[in-house]
Length: 383
Image 1 (tube, rainbow, N blue to C red):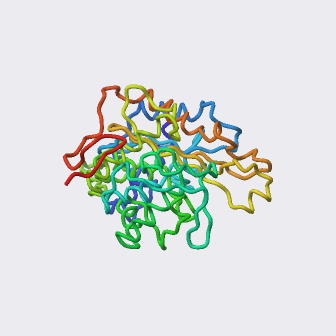
Image 2 (cartoon, rainbow, N blue to C red):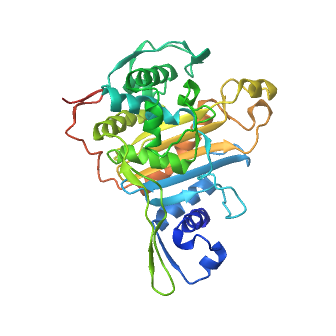
Image 3 (cartoon, one colour):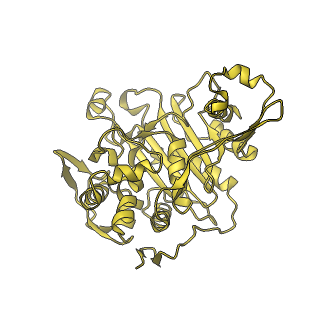
């Protein structure tokens, strides 16, 4: 049950300049003591639920999950997959995967609140189809939902309002504003971010560990901490080698708070993870569903509602947990796809199972800064 965590520790261990020219095996056998951020109980709970859960279609279905301390970015628990074996398996929690709609808070609504101080009830006209740069985009249900607030658009994960928010940010705050916002959260893009990236296009591939670090910044008032497993290493001679991690202000406190409050709505009626919250725990989340290219649908005769990747990225003031699920290979007729809503909910069941066991039900809530007024559905940046 500790294999995935050990795998992460080994890669982080060798990133320290103290060991830069050394061989991993030699370092591990040198009598060092490694002090980590793992919570044994949470690690056991996570791996046990991953191995024994009833949210799998078949043996080809893969999963990766990361749990961080929301306040520090400390790696509390990680699962690289079902029955994960170090060295043998790819660690699905540190491997990048297509993110679907997971990034809407970071490429559309977050930058809009940060740069333009949009209120949570800022209205956008939804449409059944929308053209950007010669490509046509639609909502997952192919309908228009009329005039919607960004609160409802985000929690129900409509596509067109997210694209319009992204366009507004580029027009008003500069072409690179979405890219800069994402970069501060450790989500780096090489080229320009196009419309399909906002909805999880090919350049939007990140790991559960990267997404957990980004979402933890929302839970933590806007301060980003990258995921880290090692606190310190003590050598056989008693020398302490300190391990630092990146920590910086990634967004204003009002942006973090408003995103957190909006994303609580994901668990409310019509929200994309409705029914998967944990009673007595304040939590927000963003789901993600990734589709295939048009050719793949026809080549493999896949149903229209077949998804390739499914995610939930959820956070409380205490923990942030990102879960990805996908398949090792495509098969015909959707045998290796998440077909329809109930299969696309599989990560949400794992998330709910684990979070309900590990969360302190102490009523802690996201800290409300003095920079905001009002409450959901209408929170504004004051002054």
